[in-house]
Amino acid sequence: MTSLPTPSLWTESLDYLGEVARHLKLPDGIHEKLRHCRRSLVVSIPTRMDDGSVKVFQGYRVQHNTDRGPTKGGLRYHPNVSLNQMKAMAMLMSWKCALMNLPFGGAKGGVVCDPNVLSPGEIERMTRRYTSEISLIIGPEKDIPAPDLNTTPQIMGWMMDTYSMNAGYSVPGVVTGKPIEIGGTAGRREAPARGVVHCVQLALENLGLPVPGATVAIQGYGYVGRHAHEEFENRGLKVIAVSDTSGAIHSEKGLPYKALARHKAEQRHVKGFTPAQAMTGEELLTLKADILVLAAEENQIDAAVAARMNCKVLAEAASAPTHRNADPVLRQKKIFVIPDILCSAGGVTVSYFEWVQDIQSFFWSENQIHENLRNALSRAFQTVIAREECRTADMRFAAHALAVQKVAEAIRIRGIYP
Ligand code: GLU
Image 1: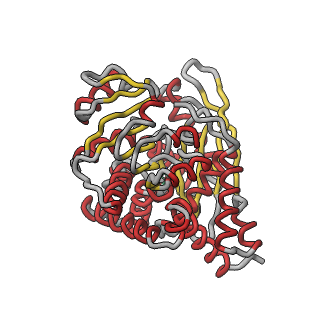
Image 2: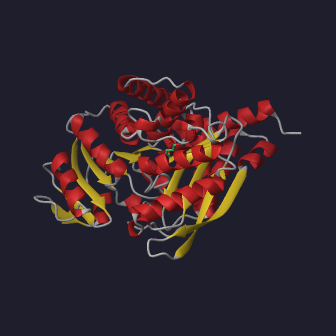
Image 3: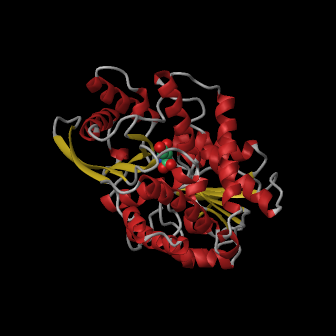
């Protein structure tokens, strides 16, 4: 799954913000402030490799806006990481947090690397040095990283340990998505997938379509895609196709979660799973299914792909998986889009719960977490659906209008310093 060639995600994000700002009639000064990220830190990360050599990786941490609170957002390890991508994703996190009513602004971090060719020891040393380099600007009341593409609870554990060793005491609230043993929360691991499935259920109910038996195709079978498969199956939906970098597989009878998860764990890809048929990743995107879940990377669908799509609900579980030029086509085809800033908000919402628990050193039950997540998503979903823009434009535009308005209001109240 490679991304389609497009102008930079950052340029597109600025253009989209411009449209939303014009629609909201935002004062120029506030719009201008939102167009800029507050801080962008570029670091080099010298890392001792297993063979004794030293390799220097490039890393970033970008904080978009702090008017509503400290910044929050994931850390990704991927060869495509760039400063502009981090800026676009930090801005998206500002909208996501505002939409979900979390007291955070948006941030994003990344290291340019291919974690598949690094050993666990190399990843640990790179992570610790990266954490040390960005420790100036992170902290429980400043900026709180979390897992994202190719980063794990163990990686968050190394970040927490590195930061704490330098502070001289344990600081669990500096990252979220940590293992439970060191201050992580119940329910964080499944939260992104649960959020997606809950949003899909709300969308089906909104469209008056039955939930049990609804068919699902999932692009991407990593951490989010796999957990979403399990959760869909638990709720009686039928996952008929999934894909990863090896290709796609399809079975109209439905793919059984347990057997496929075992196959993926053993083979490291979905290809070859029997008795499913093979298909291409592109065929999966245009397959006839009630729901298409995008759980891979950014820019997977453009206007040309959208024109051939055959689903009723498009669930954006990844960040920015749909190019803006696809939106008019999706609208015209009456495909119900659950935009990324809502559909992928499960993770950061439970991260917020984790941060609150760490600060109070008082931990909640798994049921409380699930229920609070469900309520937060339902509230956000209904607020977006009720907005005027949903009638005249689409759910993406309505969600952005709501979120940008909240951040703009915080800027207006606080004023510009000095
Ligand atoms: N990486 C996830 C996201 O982009 C989670 C971020 C977080 O928990 O802070 O939404």
